[in-house]
Image (cartoon, rainbow over all chains, first blue to last red; front, side, top):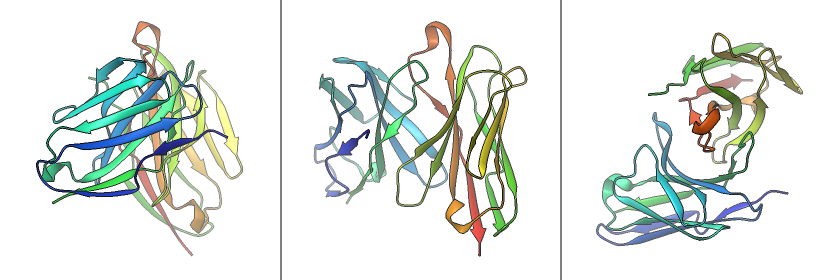
Length: 112
Length: 115
């Protein structure tokens, strides 16, 4: 059974802190994605990666960076957390040719 | 800019009603169209992926059709049940050299089924 896990379900951080969100998939998928979900705005792509050490900006990359040192792991980094980064963060992975995405359970991040 | 539009944005129906929603997407450079179901407090789960014009997929009471020439897909739910309450997302995958695996999601249709 496919599995995407995220390091935390709930996280509370303070403004200015550096925050790491980890995502691990066990399906040997090439592609991994980070989204945020906010009420009324649907899923918005932050970054994605199509191979180890390869990354591309999504629709809203500002304030975020990512790291993919191993195929199974994709990390989202908030260099200096701000209150407007309070959101639900979802990780997903996929493989071609049709790229069905498999999602993790999500991390609800609150920045105070 | 590629847009994937879903309508309606939300829908309230009574248990037993049948319903349908629409997803419109660019008709050029098509590779695949996905439907996902996203229940409250859970993660999106794949329902269908369709690749050919005229494709029809079915899973229980839920079915989907695809028209790639005019750029739309319909999702149908027959005899809605409260457990069908969720947000239904469609997502478009471009073909050719643009196929990086990045899906372009619509905003979703939120269905509420009242008992």
